[in-house]
Length: 304
Image (cartoon, rainbow, N blue to C red; front, side, top):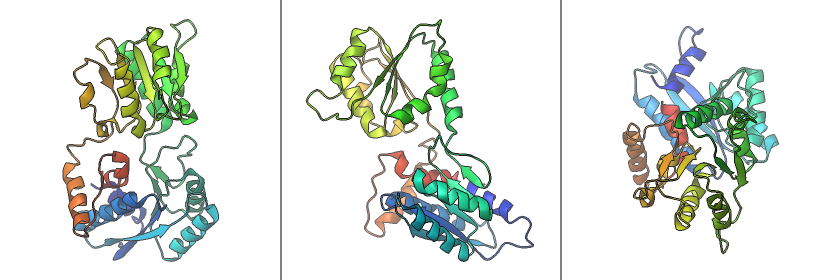
């Protein structure tokens, strides 16, 4: 059964009957236009399945807020509460989300999220569908052990990457082979890009690489690694992004390099859902770029 539909039924289980209209609040930033569309289509999909809520319909109550304006976000939440909403979805910004969570906990309103946040307290009325950071980090440890890596080099983009990898760092004891930690530079468009860093790793003769960076940098890092001879059958990469399947890796398939990653959705199982989304937007003469799954995370996660 659809997750959101199930959650709302439980929320209203003490009532004699569900209301005819169940209002769901959605908080989005101006940069979240595709997630807003995904939210709207997810609500439509639930309404289209009468087995979930046979006598009720969901109504999307969407509000636009600024990523850094927690005061305005709080005011919009209060406005939504006055309309009698049953749950709130979003926002994506950690700065505003914490305030929204606090209000939802106080008012005992379900708060639904799909973002990674290591500072998140998963208690009260919050339901975050993104894997918990500690759980995900422990999965990294299990995978590295299963692959039998005794030593490896970690390439991380920012401090959040170190948080994601904290269990992996702690699991590597002082008596084991040393690991190397390198931070990815900021400017990939500079004259040499990431090549100086990659050459350091190559010269160290390390063949096991853990790469933690944003999805839009993965291809560039691997391409530059290929250019200096680090994409061979001697090399293995573990990429922490859950969206690696959205990156075109066809250029690297003939080098024999082992590239490993986790993913939490099966693109083949969601293909029909995504196609419905694309065709629906075409009716309004709009075209969506579906190359990155983070653009349709909201739709997929609300519909599982």
